[in-house]
Length: 88
Image 1 (cartoon, rainbow, N blue to C red):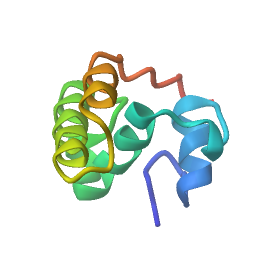
Image 2 (image 1 turned 180 degrees about the vertical axis):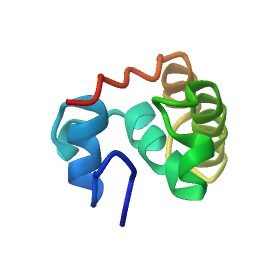
Image 3 (image 1 turned 90 degrees about the vertical axis):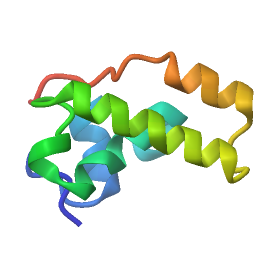
């Protein structure tokens, strides 16, 4: 699956956007990675961070409401900046 910025696959996207391996992603970072899948030009975390941030936070809310994250984890994740690193 294409994640933009020539990142194909989740591992490549984790390295491209955060400079880390997949198993090092936080809840906020993992939710940021899935936002461009909906509409890559509109939700690209580097080109439209405000859009990506809003969708990421809605995704976190859904994870909490469906029991995949605790309310405390959700609050902490939503308080986290996007943290996307420059393209290398």
